[in-house]
Image (cartoon, rainbow, N blue to C red; front, side, top):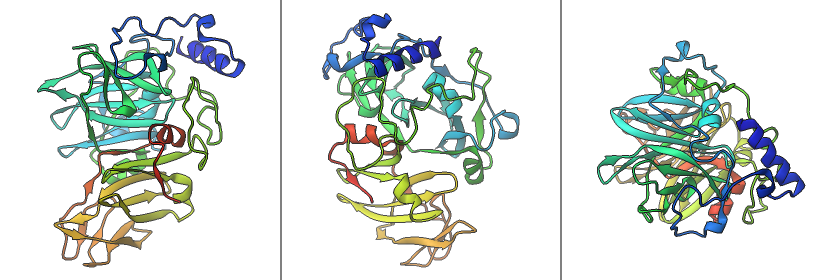
Length: 356
């Protein structure tokens, strides 16, 4: 049923047939849309409320027992020392996972139309919220709803735009899009959410055809203008720090090698971006440690070790110093950074600083 809806919307996009002619209903139903954004920019994706079923506390097992291949793309999350991988295979079909990790409630979200995987703390005013997929889209991006108040939360606006929670922001949690193999290398004790969900989906195949091809400029719904500087579906690491938005395109990082460090200044923030080309993984850190600004380079590609110029300490890819004067110190991940398609980042952040 999901694939039929997707196919219908693709046809509508490519042929110019109005969504109403495909039976897509009123986007204001069934939610009370008192919003801080224009409701004319909210589009009904077709499946309706919970038509894309969110998961809550799904089964998670050690990787050898999970049925998930090492080359699978996952979102990796670490909370209070407990690591878990969330396969994109699942998130293509469910988009939201309400989970508990490290003793804390977490909200893992992924929007296939914008390629954006973001994790949030779902506790608001001391109350954990359970989120579902509203069936609505804003700038082609997932709109979530919480079951307690039925407020609407756009994933890339990072907060509530409709309902009683208007103006409430969700706190982001550091998340990494990578391969299961790389995540296991970083966190050998990780668990993986399995495909044993109780839903009859055919997991393992991308349900949107060639939508994610890097040069494909089509979107399923109308989009604001996006920057022409990069291919529309190129993955970028979007970073918000020091009051500034910046994007680090994977293509530009690929040109620099298999293991890359970028020491950068964004607004008032000094950041380090580490790019692991083999797994196409980018992560951003604050490169100030104990009041000292550090400059990083690759010490050894084979062992995947970094070194800072100021103290000569060696660091692993988790941002932990393993030798030298700073051994045991850690870099702080920048939670306001995540991977997504370039077109989506530039629509939401048109004045972004672009790394090239």
